[in-house]
Length: 500
Figure: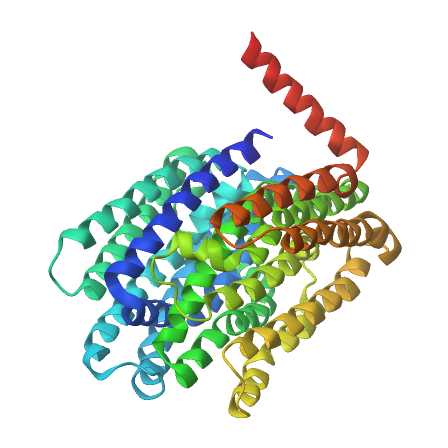
């Protein structure tokens, strides 16, 4: 509970600062440069799929060894992951400076006067990507050891640096896009260095010494190999629409997508922070063969994730234009529509996250990655065909949503047997209560929109009542009896401390 509380404090602070800094950066850069920055950064992120794969492998192996209590093997896993990440960093540089640079120069829609700035943004994004690759083993140690306080405190410093960047942008007269890219890179390098120093000082297994085990290297690489296919698919699934929007509609559409994604990411932090606390427990219970306990964690993780997100996503979807107007002075065209699609997609993806963690714990991810990855890879060709046929920008996200639903169904079919969990149990403990809460929650905003008028005050009333009604439904129906008792006791304990 303490880990979760720290993560939510971190999330609340970062969400407020990120939303504020996003607004100021959009104003200072302008819609066009804002779109250029995020599409260029996203291009390098595509090549980071290799790193995402190895990070999943590292976290799984570290958490597994912590579950078995083998300290020597834990150290060996960490050293092996450092060696693999060094190789990955070289691959990211090679792919970015060849295929990425070619795509930037030949295929992306960049105004002539901004090509030089886009080039330097691209080079700086490579530096940032390499730094993040090399710091992943250290962050994996923190997550595996569940030292979430480190994330909370370092994130506070990270948030302060973001505010400093905004301040520097407001006072400089130099090219704002280049200045922002330089400062953003420096901020990321410093944060990565802090993570590394923290781990080296506090965790013995993260102190480097030469070690090489071909068998361990092969096992970790093999796990990462199948993860790599899935992560390549996921990255294209996430960044493919961004690239297609640039090719067909230019950087203004990218600005709308970037603004919608910023809002989605802010909301998504609620579920991701909760999952950072619960995911290591899922892996450890599997490693210690406590399958019933693991199943209970999956049920509760999925239901809590869905309820937390629904309380935030539903009112935001209903009042997206008003909220975006208050947040951003200049709202790029199409942002509200993009955001609504992205929030529905977020609900689907994050609800399935505990299942994905459980199948990763087994180490047998081949079938899962082939089938779900294959579905995700279809987004680029399908969306391209839709756009070629004259589809509007929002049609890309309609394709995205359809594939999210299909991927969720495939995840259920593959992961449930792998962790010895029946579809009936998952349906009764997750799907039924979540669907019932969703349907019942839709009634409140629908009725309010029928009787209220236009304006900020009416919109705020709709948001407030929707959050309250959805929260009541989530507590009474979305949570099981033990979860309600736990929350009630925590609230009573908190009030008792305040009154004493």
